[in-house]
Image (tube, rainbow, N blue to C red):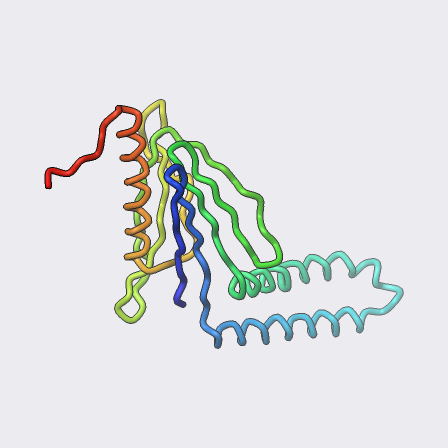
Amino acid sequence: MKNTVEKHSDGINIYAEFSVKSNPIGKIILIILVFVLIVFFVLVFSTIDVYTIGKSIFPIVIMAFFLLVIPIRYLVWNLYGKENLIINSKTISYNYDYGIIKTNLKTLPFNILGTGIELIREDNGIRKGRLIFYDYREKDHLPEVIHYTSILVNLEEVKELDKEISKLFLDEFNQVRGFLPFSAN
């Protein structure tokens, strides 16, 4: 997998789009699995006697949901999946894009934002991980995980995004305090 991150900032918000780039062989295997499951349920449903269909429809629907919807959702995610993230000094907003279906934008306010990087695995010498967001609670300043990115990307890209987030808070701090950025050079 060569997942990617595209990011940009408007000075107030940082926009990041994490994209899934799955292995083509894995996609083909998943398509075949979904096709086999669909054929299986069509065969099962077609062999049911007309008189007993009332008793067996509920179990078939439940089984079809778990054995079809979950693999189909996973397939669509691997074909078109994206996670959109918007970070500013007061909230984190995110949604998931399945190509044809997009989840609602969920906004999480925080008191004091902390970030962390979690190393998940290493593929051919490339370290991959995810960005974790913590809220230091107002009542006791204990960290609480409020969100983590779901798509694993190159650790260097995660570190760059983490630096952009830190820069956003530094810029806001300088603006609020009236500090002027300067260089001694």
